[in-house]
Amino acid sequence: MTEATASTPSPELAGPADGGDPRHAAAVLGMVAYLELASFSRLAADAGLAPTLRQRLELSDMARRALDRVDRVAARVEELGGQLEPTMGPFAGVLAEFDSRTVPSTWWERLLKGYVGYGVADDFCRILAGSVDASTRALVEEVLDDESHSRFVVEALAEAAQGDPTLASRLALWGRRLVGEALNAAQRVLADHPTMAELLDVALPEHQGDAQQRLFSLLTADHSRRMDRLKLAA
Amino acid sequence: MTEATASTPSPELAGPADGGDPRHAAAVLGMVAYLELASFSRLAADAGLAPTLRQRLELSDMARRALDRVDRVAARVEELGGQLEPTMGPFAGVLAEFDSRTVPSTWWERLLKGYVGYGVADDFCRILAGSVDASTRALVEEVLDDESHSRFVVEALAEAAQGDPTLASRLALWGRRLVGEALNAAQRVLADHPTMAELLDVALPEHQGDAQQRLFSLLTADHSRRMDRLKLAA
Image (cartoon, rainbow over all chains, first blue to last red; front, side, top):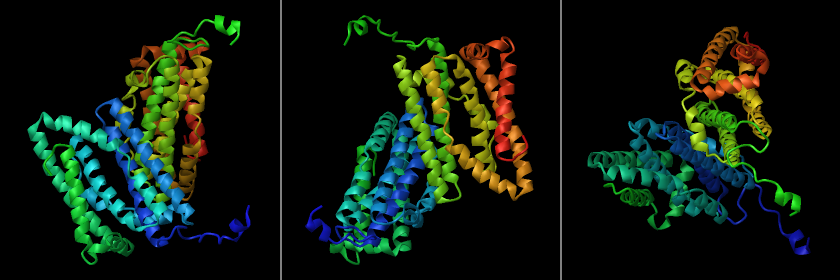
């Protein structure tokens, strides 16, 4: 150990070493952790309803990876001096209304819901993470970057919808319903969590006062890209 | 590499190196893999309904470990020259009737169902594994030896039932219902899978012809021990 190391002040217990408001980091990490736990539950439920054993195994594996991501977020929360449960607690139930308003009636609707609904939630977190410390931001981006579920859904849905125009137009309608409800859910999060609203203003500084509208147009654009990938009308 | 090693015949592709009928090993591994996958689904569903976030996280973690056990079984299946899906496929749905006849109506009933219903299934596999090659048997015993869920249920239920005699007697009744249905399910597995019935005769050789009755008394005794641990009447 050198003199220089010994004289370096020890990092704050309750904040990131590389700057940023620790409340902001905690809010983003808490929400991401909760969303990943919710993904775990949803993917496991999807697995149980999958039409083939192979798909059941694949979706179960994706569920497991969502839970691994909860652990990675928990590790960062602890690095910052916090604890997982109280950090994610405020966000528990953030999807309850969304879920109750978007009960899928078929396997295809269920798959699309995972892709579109959670896609919007991920994008929302990614945008807010723009204003937290660099290490937290990098972790959030990494954690939200699992492409395996998207690929699974795109392959399954694109193939099914291509051969069945009725299905394709019903799914396009369902996609619009989902994105509408997802945007409502995002709006509720901002209304219920002042820290998140603060974060948004920091993340989109050029749109002060108007940040919510800008957020919604970013989320809608990402949604359209996802629907395009499925060859469904946005 | 020595001369002796070089002259050792390579092991059979489709069978255990240390003896035993490969069809028997495959049947036990297939059933254990399916039961662990079903445990994963059930634990994940329980997690989603858990009354606290802490319990939700604990049960989700247990679900993940059940899926890790599927992987361990899969590795052994592959060592024996097989593949997971076709090996477990014949056992998919082995719990469907049991599940449809034992829909829990409360959180406590749900916990007890996991402990009692899957307890019987695990014991059933453990007994049949007595007649397969030593490596497969050791793996099955290890895989079925996760105490964490039992501990979770025993702690939660014993405490709740102790302070509430009405709950305790309702759960005792539910336990009898569960074990009855679990024994029916075991009987169906033996009837539908001739390999499993063969295995049973090998596993309990002193009870040839009468092995099923002996199996049921072993399963019932284990069930009584579990109910004792919960301080509930068997």
